Amino acid sequence: MKPLSLYIHIPFCARKCAYCDFASWPGREADWGRYFDEIEAEIRLWSEETDFGLLSEQYSIATVFIGGGTPTLVDAACLEGVLDACRGIAPFEPDAEITVEGNPGTLTPEKLAVCRRAGVNRLSLGAQSFDDGLLKALGRIHTAAQIKQAVAMARDAGFDNLNLDLMYALPGQEMAQWRDTLDAAVALGVDHISAYSLIVEPGTPMAARVASGAATVPDDDAVNAMQREAISRLSAAGYERYEISNYAKPGFECRHNLTYWRRGDYLGLGCAAHSLLRGRRFHNPDALEDYLSGMRRLDEVALTRQDAMEETLMLSTRTARGLDLAAWARDFGAPFNQGRERALARLEAGGLIEAGDGFLRLTTRGMEVQDAVVLELMGETV
Ligand code: SF4
Image (cartoon, rainbow, N blue to C red; front, side, top):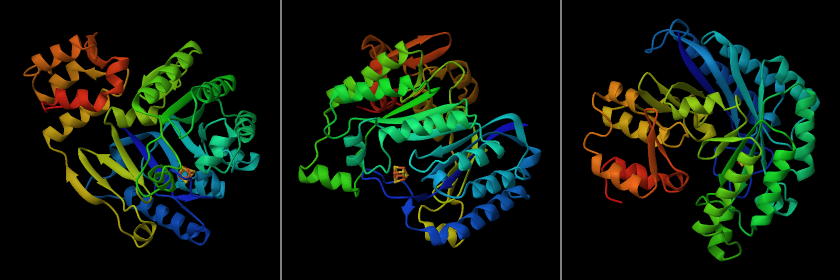
């Protein structure tokens, strides 16, 4: 049996955050019931024979990630129903990692108890900042105090694998505020921290504020300084940086996300969910209406060898483990350094890559310019 990861998208939120361009909508309570009916119908489809054969004969489910949106906004019994239905797709591994993403403003002990009963063993909380002023500017619905309450509530409910998502490079954010946020997350003793730099997405209220001059985002040097602050503070506190934006205490790396970075098979359910199954990529529609009307499996394509090489390089170099050189030679029929000798020498001399133990990995500086390093290794001019 091969391991399979499932991603389930819950596209509902209490309010839209100022920076968010994810497939998520507030005020769509009237659609919740129909949406869960559609997801369960989609799960039934994958529980039966498809052109991929019967998944239950080929896979066991190693990880499930219920993300959003705000999965903890809806009735937890709906999440339980979805998880139960997923057992029809393939058997769950006994130690399957099952994550639910939650917003600290929407948690209750009752919802957490239902999640635990359903087998959820990892909770990922969108904290973003411990500064109430910044939380307000981001349009978050919770305060810093609520993040602390949510962590305590999750521990009380029996969660021993907790992640906090944090954001830096926020408009007006000072280094001291970022340090305070990192220290507050560490003080809560969570097992995993994701630290993402804010990307100002076109069409969001945040983009309009930046365009009008009402908000200013930090320059690249300031962004890199904040990232380095995260690396040093979190590593001093016992978190290992195992991916560009992800830090974990030993044994708490997110297995679901490792599936993406290692190009394992995953099936996405719900609107805007993406899949990679046996070398084919496809996705569901981004628009809720299209998903509700039954549209599925868009832009399906069998990846070419070149696609697979580019993805492998792009994703593996995000991780501290790096690119597995023996696996590359096996999968693509030629050593990685063949034809790349000069680019490799240039990048190594520039302190952007290092090799050892059969892996090629990016240095801290290399990770700051990962796109450019990957382009150079793919043979393009940067
Ligand atoms: S809670 Fe998350 S998904 Fe919902 S609007 Fe905010 S950032 Fe977007």
